[in-house]
Image (cartoon, rainbow, N blue to C red; front, side):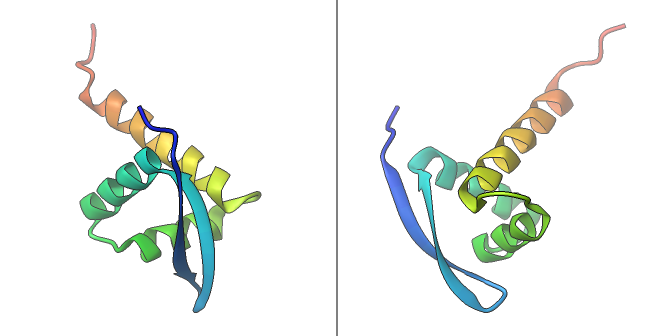
Length: 79
């Protein structure tokens, strides 16, 4: 697994900013955006509007929560 951090420019509310994330996070963020029919900028804007702290951290937490929700949806109900 690579821990290479990639910095990308994104547009949020009409302003350019840079976001640094590991390549795996960029890949998963793109997959989430694709599933939702959104561009990366649109998804990052949504995350930005809901965040309380650092944007890169907020994106990582968003991805973690999304993966947990997906895993929960794929787990057969026990009973």
